[in-house]
Length: 265
Image 1: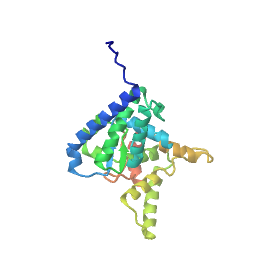
Image 2 (image 1 turned 135 degrees about the vertical axis):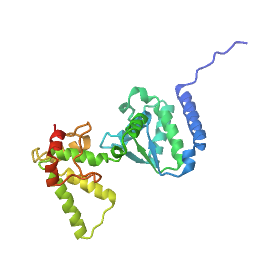
Image 3 (image 1 turned 180 degrees about the horizontal axis):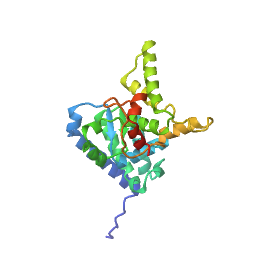
Image 4 (image 1 turned 30 degrees about the vertical axis):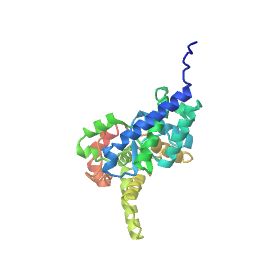
């Protein structure tokens, strides 16, 4: 009897088998998860390089206007749909739309991350996925900061920095904040804490584009805010009232003139 040589499995068949194994392994592990049993959270926070790559593909497919992963939030149903599309394309040997936007070292892991993500959404019954641009290393470094540093609102701090570096008069932002606060109170319009936060940030950013030509300063200001142009990446003195997260007023800013001068160097 002639011995038949073993025929290697087609790549699509092998990948389909491996993604099913990945899904089964994730399903088994999730059943034992103490985190899921402890309470039902509606948001799954995806932290890690492969998840970031997954988010980039999702942004490409949805034509998301910003190429920023940090706090990129997507409905779980939309993420689950992409998981199915990725697994189907990979097992059929078709290119995954948007995969060119991720590094080659991560590209091969995308089908497996899709299989695991699909199981996570099903088991955890999440309604949204929040992606992080940072990882465990950054989280560990954050844990080493002093408590007062951890409490700093990064959005508020960035807006304060841009106000101090770009505005004609940093004190004007504080005037806008006070005026808008009194105006809303006068007309009987309330606001949530998040709305107040965004309003005060908008006041900080109101005059950052004054140097630009009037025809272009709007677009330039949007670019500065969206991409972080015009602010220092290093840690700088906070010229704010302690614990308030708000800019100092005119007289107070004059008191802290040395700090402002150092900040702007």
